[in-house]
Length: 180
Image (cartoon, rainbow, N blue to C red):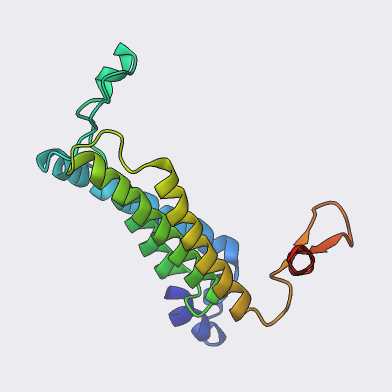
């Protein structure tokens, strides 16, 4: 959002040219997420404790793991929230790669939330079954990969380039078509 608002003004204000550099925006997005997390961390932790959203032990783990019981869970809400907010602030929101990344991030976060929900609200210390989580993650990933391929105009998104090998490129779609 800041990129889309401020970079066009760089022709009048040259100091705004820094917004064209992805390293600058990455650094400030990281700092923004860190500062927001530091500001709201105690508040969110206290809120999770007050709502009794705490870790439940399974009963068959080592005794030293008993100390984890009562530790607030669902802290991913804070991590995902601050990451999404700082990404929306500092990234080029017109870039479809950013939007797809956020969809993937939020989708995987939803799976983690569902797992924590089952553990805390439903009082099932096992959480979601591992295969169930994997199926949801595969579905989310498949949707994002499909959208990525459909939105790509360059033809490079289905290619893998190996580092340190100048012209060694593997076209995954060619391999997929040959397998099918």
